Image: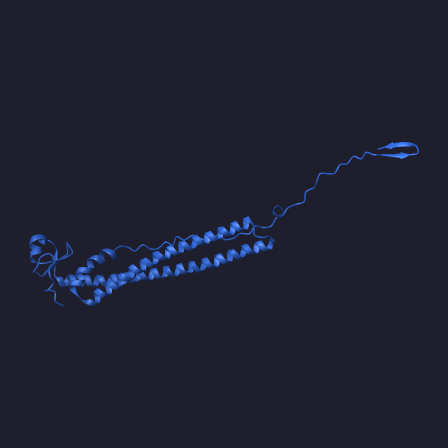
Length: 224
């Protein structure tokens, strides 16, 4: 590969001759005399091989990040499936309890069913939020993989030196993994039907009666 025709970005008409490790920058003779004199300077070919190896290692790291995100994606799908099953199960238990008590829908049953629907809605929104975040991270990683592959395949020294710096900044940052902060659907816990719940028999106050009357007999009036 020819490294002698790389144009200097700072001085028109000059070709780069060395690479400054101190500044991570290609330099020409004018660059050296004006700014980089005394810096750590190495051959461009040596720096190229170093950067190319770094790009390949970065590619492995980014692909590993993608695998982690794919696992996270699968976990979100499992949670979504579980949400639907838990919601259906809880709904059925509530209906069964209502039927067992042989009661019609009233204000209380409507309120608890509404609460369940609201919890289910919040659960769904939290799942969707995590899914959006995962998709954004996956797109970022996919873009990095594609960019790295293009640079490696191009075998272009200018491309390697011009793009590697920006990629080093973005890829060197640790990827923030999803914590999956997702709310849960509450489970229905039917209460045991006890005497207090069903009711009890209570004694009424005794009936007290005072009878007043009189009979007429041959012997006169009898009062009682």
